[in-house]
Every structure is written in C-alpha cells, then in structure tokens.
Length: 126
Image (tube, rainbow, N blue to C red; front, side, top):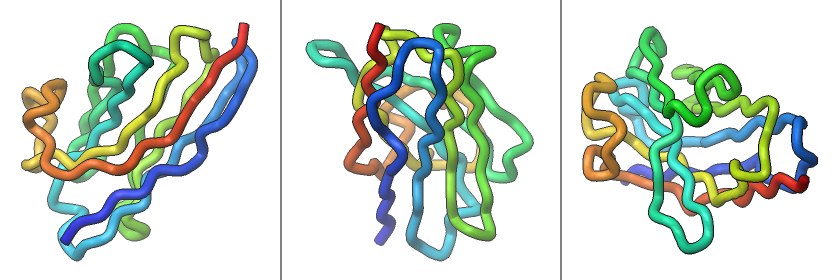
C-alpha cells in the first residue's frame, strides 16, 4: 500500500515563496515518477510539475515554468515543490501523486497517476 502525505502549504503574499513536501510510504518509491497537481475552487485539477524516477528529467506546466522547481530525495522517499514568485492565481489545493511508471512521458494527464495524497492548501494574497 502506498500513502502520500503533503505538507508545507499556507498563506503567503504575492511574490513570496513556499516549499511543499510530499512524504511517501512503500518500498518501491524510487521506481516511479512523481508529480504535483493543483485544484482551484470551481476548476478541474491541473498538472503542475513532474519528475522522473531518478530525478534526471523534469517537466512543468507553462504557467509555473521558471517559478516552480520539483525535486526528489529517493533515500528519504520525499518529493518537493519549491514555489517562488507566487501569484494569486497559484491559489489552490496542491496534490502529490505517483505516476504509474518510471518516466514522465504523458505525465500531464491525471489518468497516468495511480496514488494521490490528500492535498495541502496554498493561498496567495494580492
């Protein structure tokens, strides 16, 4: 059984930074790519960033490229999302998810992920 637990969300002013963390359980963490998604009120859950099993490849949504950085520590079974230059439109619940595979090919689709965390709220005030 795989469990994912996000933390690090909160309230921040526009232009500020937050670092989200995702703690994973399960012995095969390092065998899977991981991703972050977000869901704003009244909107569909959307892709934010993904990282391959080794951390060697990453991919970002255009809306966060250059501001967010995804990383992972396989020894600690952790995935991180460093968010800089935050904007009010980044306000959402952020979810960590496990990709059902090693690579980040087609990693923008929610259907490519098989385990999800409960989410952490990020609120950016103007």
